[in-house]
Length: 123
Image (cartoon, one colour):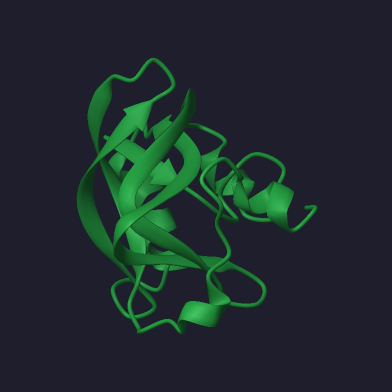
């Protein structure tokens, strides 16, 4: 299974240890979603015309996915979506992403098209 990450699960961030047995595929872009600043972590929501840059990983086991799912609120804080992402080679790949499960205010939008969340926040 491929997992698209855009916040605390990315390299150098506080929850990256959850990815320790996963293989990094590389940087990828998720179209028609926007990134929002939720304080200590980000969230994404569907938004036509927007894009989010993040990292794409191969999850090696269902156990790893279940641990991440619990971290992400198990359907309450974030919900799982099946999406298509673009790799750096412009190839499209199916992936899973966790989407924030509440409305977000437009003034909390944190993304520019080429900016990773950790760079935005100097993490």
